[in-house]
Length: 597
Image 1: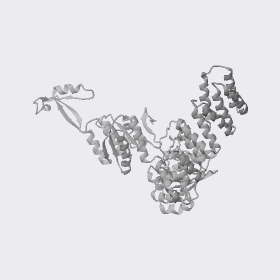
Image 2: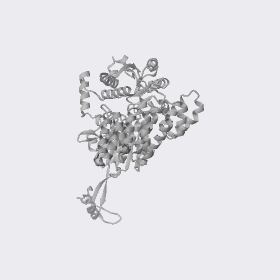
Image 3: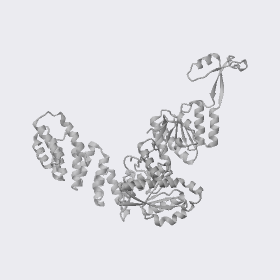
Image 4: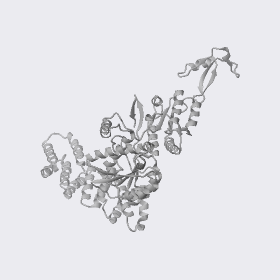
């Protein structure tokens, strides 16, 4: 841990207010010696300064750091505990507790270490430090020691997690079931949390990647089959391009291709070979997924699907992961963005199928909790969206007397038409006044809906709804998911005119220098421009290769981390989840796609 660098700046800035004097010069020299790793000389210099009324406390602290750097933790503790006892009001007391915690852990004096960890957290409340230090020093403790420490310090989540993981692999688990259940209830531990903890990091010089996808190799002579599987071939070419780049960086991934033929029976015949893999990519269809899922759980083999948004792939399998966000995640991230950025509260939600209705419901539930008013939650298909288009653009004439017409005509945005033929004149039956002017009004009032979420990727439904909004000249926010900007059948002009904002899980900034370099390299290797699936295959294998290299075969133990920057795409984030939580929100601005979140 390199926290001493931070502390040096922190504490030395405090000293900047001290007047220039001989003790100050001596202190600066002691610091210089310490920075140059001349620790014995530095300790001697700090020792002389301990009696100084201003610098003494700092001399104790830094001399303790010098001893700690020499792994002489007992003498380091002697210096820091002087500060604790003789300078109890020193404003940097939490730093003393921090270093005392580490020193006592290094000496395996756990009672004292936890005591100072408690005192440090009373100041700092640094849960990340607590988890990190507990994971480092307590992971290999005996079950007896873990039980004792957990009883004495029951509020450390990481300590409880290590204990629970140790308990569930005990031969006689029945004795500990009440404790495990208590820990699970207190910290919301899932079975996945507990199972993954028993996986030891396994690093290797190379990794066997089983690519279990529907290549349909035995049908390559049929041009229709080739076209139907063009997506898989392009994805695999992208993987190959990434594989060669990873190899140049010393990361060796060996691909073993298995054609599932979209068939469960075919996949069953492959299982004896798949169980040798370090990681399985795929499969894609329900039958093959069922077969490989059983193997994955039985033999603790990670499987990852690069294409799907369907959470059924990861259901009930702690070794299954999705490279993309699941549909619910996409809807939730879009709703979070809307709640933070859009003040239009009147919302209509349209969906087309069961999956879309689930996404729409997630979106609805979140916004309702945030005070949005859901005016409609409506099913639409190609036909009903056309009928809605007709309804929304249908108008009727509303007649006014001259006084009313003159008043309304002064309102911005209202258009009054004065009748120029006697035949158009009408008389108000109640007042007897002439109705000499009229206004065309939509049957459905204009701007009655401020905000629309279109949970569909059907270009027909999209075009019908957007066409209705343009014809009405609505001031409305439009949100959706899927990359409508690259669908040839979606009206591009409508998307730009209405400032449509989309949640796009595979967004790539194609004007970036990184993408240009990738495109040029891909052209050189395959003599064709990279497609969407070439890009996906490349991004996917670069991500997988990086994680295997950094964290080993069971890389999921490291996924509960901050955002991992992508290669072409926006990145990956798995905060205790098994689907990616990065969902870019984009819109077109000045004819360029721009990420908004």
